Every structure is written in C-alpha cells, then in structure tokens.
Amino acid sequence: MKRLADILTASRFVAALALVVTGLAWGERALLPAVILSILAWSTDSVDGALARRDPNWHPTWIGEQDVGFDAALALGVLAYFVLSGLFPAKFALVWLAVWGALFVLTRARAVLLLALGGMDGMVLWATLRANRDLGWIVIAWMVVLAFMDRHRFKEVLGIFFNSAARLLGLTRTEAEEASQQKSANHEVQ
Image (cartoon, rainbow, N blue to C red; front, side, top):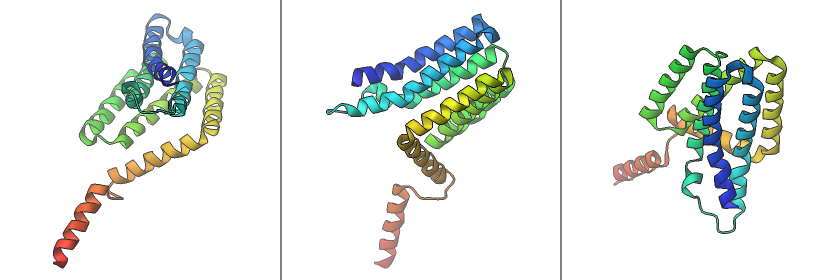
C-alpha cells in the first residue's frame, strides 16, 4: 500500500512537468486535456494518504514527508500551463509567486504556503471559467464532490490551516511560547 501511495504522490510531480510541456507545445488548444490531467493529479492527493495510513506498519517515507512539496509542484505546473497557454497573465502570476514565496521564506509557516497554493487554485479556476465556462463548472463540481467524499480529511486540513494562520497572525500562542510564559510566571512567583 505504501509503495502505491508514494507512486501516487510522486505522480503529481510528473503531471506538473507534463502540464508545463503541454502549455509550451499546444497552449490553449490543450485546455481540456490539461484540466483532465490536473483533476486526475489532484485526485491522487485524496487517495495517497489514505492508502499509506492503511498499512499496519505505517511510518512516513521520504516521499510521504514531502507531500506538500509535491502538491506545490503540481500547483505550479497547473499555473504554468495557464500562463504558457496565454489563459492567465504572466505578470500577475509572477508577482503572486514572488510575494508569497518571500513570505514563506520569512515565516516558514505552512499557513502561508497553503494560502499561496489556494490563491493559485483560485486563479486557475477563474482562468478555466473564462476560457470554457462549462469546463469550469465541471471543475467546481469535482472540487465539491472530492471535499464531500474526503470530508474528514478536508476538516482536518482546514483546522491545520486556521490554527497555523492564527499562530502566524499572533492570535494564538505556540506551545513553546506557552511554556516560556509559564516558566516566566513560575519565576516571578518565587
């Protein structure tokens, strides 16, 4: 199971490369195959973790530990297809990547990465709807069905995102900050 999960995870990187080549070679004419490949590749994200966790001797492999990196590679590949095919403005995409890349380097916060990836997904969805409204609605329907089918994981990811965002914005404290404050409070009492 774990090997299949790793293959599915790594396939997102292969799909990203294929989308870049598709954008370069066929551009807008390959919108339907590019969207289908994107949907298939994103669908592996719902399956790989579940497969890996079914293994009774489960422990994360190197590929499993890099899951978010493979997700980021796919998101970049999808965005690259839309930019290279002329369906999305390159300047906007580059500014987006530069700003969020700098924020991620500065903070190393998973919430920043998730926000950046979510924004990229939104850009691609907008570009799909503009290029082919019916195809865009199919993508939206697929997203809703996938979120419903994997609703427990979806809730978990949303929780991780909101908790990370709250810590990043200083709305909650990390465990290290809590321990430090407790230590200071104990020291003041003595």
